[in-house]
Length: 525
Image 1 (cartoon, helix red, strand yellow):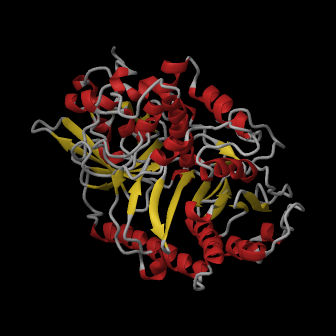
Image 2 (tube, rainbow, N blue to C red):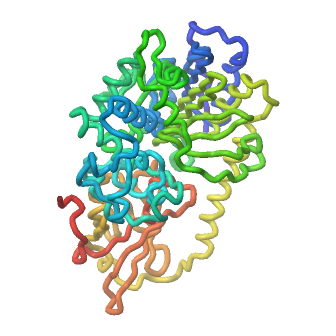
Image 3 (cartoon, rainbow, N blue to C red):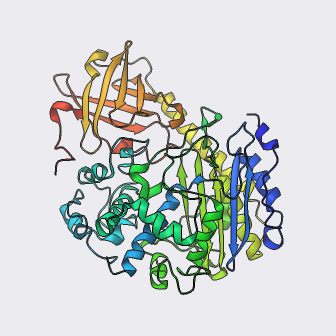
C-alpha cells in the first residue's frame, strides 16, 4: 500500500540531543517504520536515572498531519499488569494483604472449576499464569468488547475447565489479573482506576496517563490504532476494555512511562521526593523474582542472538537473560496497539517503545538495537531478522489455511435444512449465543459481544465457517454441529480457521448446547 504518511516530517522533541548509544536512533526508527508499515511510534530511553531519549515519530493517524510526540497516548495493553502488581505491592507494604493470602480471604465468592484450587489459590497465583487455565481461556468474556461487568466475568471462572493441573504449567491469562484488580476495592473502598490514578500516577507525576479510552475526543493527543484489514492498513477505533482494565486498559505516553521505569529501576524510590517510595525495595525484588519457570526453546535462526538459558515470570513482569544481563520486561497488545517495556537492572537501563500498529518487528527491532548500543554488542540486522521471521510466520499460517481448504469436501451437503441449525445455544461460561436465519443465511450472534456477529458459510458436512462482519477481527472460525441419532443437535464446537488468530479468541474453549440444556446461571450467587 502507499506510504504517503511516512513522508511527513518526524516529530522530534527539542529537549534531547542524540549522543552516545542513542545516536542514530532517529534514522533507525524511521527505517523500521517503513519496513513494518507503522504510522506512529514513540520511544524513550532511561539510563542512570536520566531520560536519554523521549520522542515521537510519524503520525497519530495515517493520512492526517497530527504528529506523535513524547506526550501522545498509546494503549499499553498488558504492560498494565505491572501496574496492577505494583498496586498490590503497595497494599502488602501497608499490611493490608500478603502475597500468599488465599484469594477467598478477600473475595469470599471467588471460585475456580476445581474446588481444591478455589480453596488454595493465593494472591500470588493470580499474577503468575500458573492456575491451570488454558492460554487466554475466557478472554471472549471481555474481548472483543463485551457488556459483561467485572464481577460477572469472574463468576464465570468456575465453569472454565482447566487445561493443566494447578501450578504445573505456564499459560498466559488475563482473567486472573482482573481478579487481582478486584481485590483492591475490597481492601480500600476505591475502584482499581482510582487507586492507580491516586497511588501511582499522581505520586510519579504521570499526568498524561489514564485508564480508559472513554473520554477521548477528536483532537486529543492520542494515537489512533491501526491494523491490517484484509491486506490494507486501516485506522480503528480504540477498543474499550474497561471491564478487564486491571489486565490491560492503561493508556500512557513515553514521557510518563519513563517516570514509571525510573521508579522500577530505583527499587520503588521516587526521584526527587525525599524518603518517599511507591513501594518498598523488598516488594520490588519480589515482583522481579521468578515465580513461574518458562521453557527456553531456541529462537528461529534469524533471531539466534535472543537465545537464553533462563526464562521465568515474576509478578507482572517477564524475566530472562540477554547477553549476560538479567532482562525484566513485558509486551502488550490490543487491536492496533503494541508496546514493549524492557529494563536491564544492573545497567540502570530501560527502553520503552509504543506503536499504533500491530507489528512486533517494530518494537522489538528498535528495543534490541538500543540495548545492543548500550552493551557495545555485535551488530545484528534486527530489521531483516524480524522481517524474515514475520514473513515465515505469515507463510506458515497461510499454508495451514490452504491445506485446510484443499482437504475440504466442497461438494458435501449439510445433514439438515439450514433452519434446523438455527436456535438459541448456550455455553457454560460465555452464556447465550444465537444462530438465526437472515435473508436465507445462517447468522451467529454472541449475545454480549456485538462485534462477534458473523455469517455462517457452509464449509463441509456439518461444519460452517463463521465469517465475522467486522473484518478487523481477523478471527474467522469453524463451527461444527454434532447430531444426536434422531437428527437433533447435541452440541456445537468452534476452532479458529487460522493458526495466526490471536489467542484471546478462545473459541476452542466453548462448548455450545441447545438452550433446553442450559447449565446453571454463572451469575447466580
